Length: 407
Ligand code: PMP
Image (cartoon, rainbow, N blue to C red; front, side):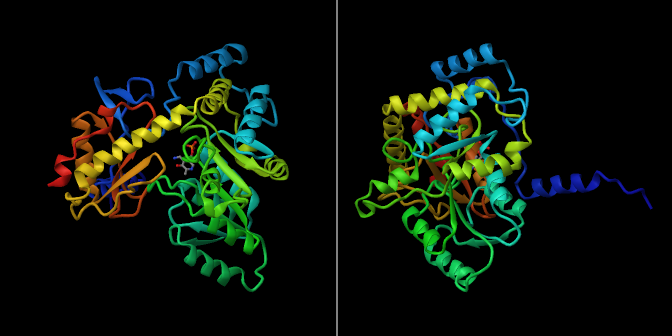
């Protein structure tokens, strides 16, 4: 019998991925994170980045990062509770809390670590967590880390959520409860039904956590998030639409890196003592913190950036409707368009994994960098092109050719 090769399961796993058109490749970009990038020597429109407000390469944001690096060094030197605390961290937390109209905020190193740390700190074995089926992986991992009972409800389906909460909690279930949802769903681009969702949380005395990774800087009149968006609708006048816990990231519209929690001071004090991804990880470097703080200042001072993003979304949707809209119905392979959505994420559902890869490749050849999103990021058979728009795109960047898709 040949000796057991311990590497064989790894080879087999990769071969299986390849057979299912699920192989992954890292495409290195050789230019700054901007609306147009250089890839393999070629300039192209970047339609796959979460750099929604075009701040990642902004001169003022970069200057802030450089100045902070000069003044405070390249790394923070330790976890925040040991040696890694700088006044810069305090300043960014204060700015984030102000921006989110919260009492306080706490920085994490990434949005992923924020979700994983917050949910596992708050919930424990005798808790029940109600989680949207399309929630981000970092939420799912936080739920699993907590060892709580996880009840998954159908995507944004408030009837299903209510029924499941009632079944679990209606009889005075023991332990705490958490309701958790993306604010903007990262692969579909749609918004949580916040008013009804919050009403259910409050009716059943559940903690409420909204992940505003893709909402911060993008959703609501001034980019403060889904609460601001829904509060402006006439039917919600006078309603308090603040969840208990807001999670965000500085890695998308803010153009830097770093996650955060915002909410009551009690919550933030608790997380500082209990969130392991906060306690046991070296804090963000000075440059990233100063960059995020400057980006936040610019977002507040220059609302025209968000207005430009919205104009670009309109151009893109117009282009889609010329290709797939009235009189030119989408082929059966394209199930839905998130047309009319307010987020900067526009998914074009293709279905088949290989077809999505081919389309992304064709667009790449035409000079448009687009992500083909496949399992496990989305369900099998739900492969899609995920377009992410930026305030910095020019009209020509927003009209990729869809010739093949139409055939
Ligand atoms: N939540 C959501 C909804 C996300 O899409 C992401 C990033 N893809 C994260 C959290 C994680 O944020 P970060 O990239 O800062 O770790």
